[in-house]
Length: 252
Ligand code: NAD
Image 1 (tube, rainbow, N blue to C red):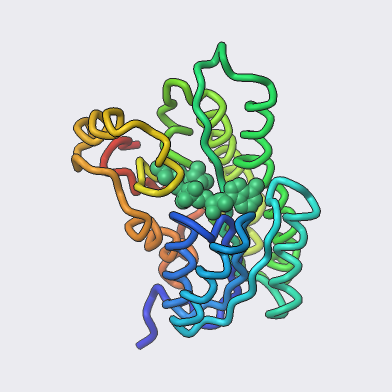
Image 2: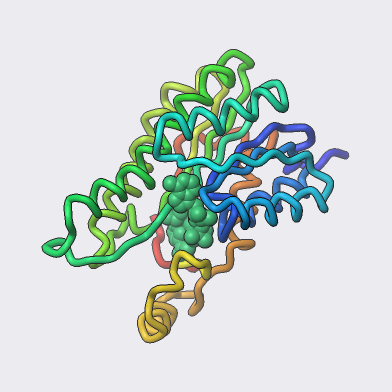
């Protein structure tokens, strides 16, 4: 019997796939039988990640591009259509994190956060939707953050961008579901990736202590949620949801 979580032959784009959660999602999708377009700014790490996915039997294309720019976002989705004849799954995962109190946030920091963590989600999705709608099958999975739900001190701009991702997800889910294109978000809790490398060990220890699970998550513990949402029949009834692999930090 075919696994309810199979992605056999599905054509998937994963942005920010060179590192952390995106890299883990790419590996999980490769193992589940997907064909992949992996995109990132970091060409060297992207090439390594593509090889790791090929070692799991996947056909993989890479695109070095900036997801926050129209040309970059368009080129990523276009590569999938050129290479594989269409697109079935889009994972909007690329993101960045900076930290400052609101009064110290510059307009430039604010704008860059919105560009990379929110505008990119709109740009990549806008390009991917028409072919998904035409084939009456598609999945868009947006990596938000629990900070978009609960907020975080010194993270007004990041929390606002991620709350925007969740709002975008719900609105688009309403538009797209009648076309059998399902749009959902994942709002991870703290996950051990290079994104949080800059945070002090003391802060991490204090944060871990307040988590019901008493520890940060790992990227490979988030990836199966993205596999569930992409799979058929596994993900068939999720519409506009925000799933929370978060060590118990937020309970909606
Ligand atoms: P990461 O830094 O390990 O990986 C992010 C990847 O995105 C990097 O490879 C980076 O090069 C790429 N990227 C950044 N800006 C880009 C751009 N403009 N164009 C193309 N690629 C770009 O981080 P991660 O922790 O794996 O984060 C992945 C996603 O998960 C992000 O959206 C992040 O906000 C979210 N998230 C992370 C955590 C966490 O604790 N690590 C928690 C909640 C949500």
